[in-house]
Image (cartoon, rainbow, N blue to C red; front, side):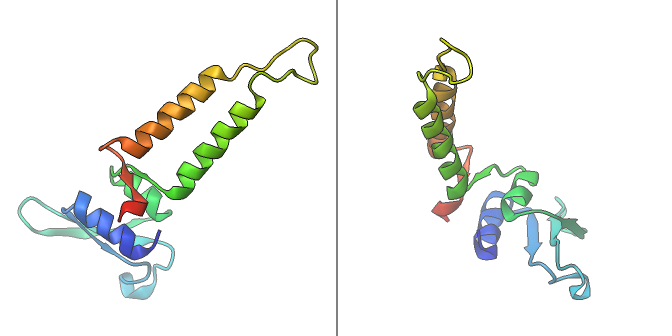
Length: 126
């Protein structure tokens, strides 16, 4: 995710904050953190708060639930693994057959939720 995408998502879903790029505050001393200013109900700005992490992690800390294309790809890969292993016989335990039916259903439900829910921000749509 680029800073521009991060900034756009933050401004739409949290109009009560102002975000700054890494190093654009504190006299350019903060290369590893973002600065976030909260706008109080009276319109006054708070002090600058430092946030560490990826853009997605920071948005989640700001109560904006975000999913990225790589998150979706990971879930799809996990689902393929479950589907591949499901029903196969264990090489370590004679007669044991792997049953990943519940995991397959749960992963499909999560994917569907992430791709269709209005509660989730899909990063690639911005």
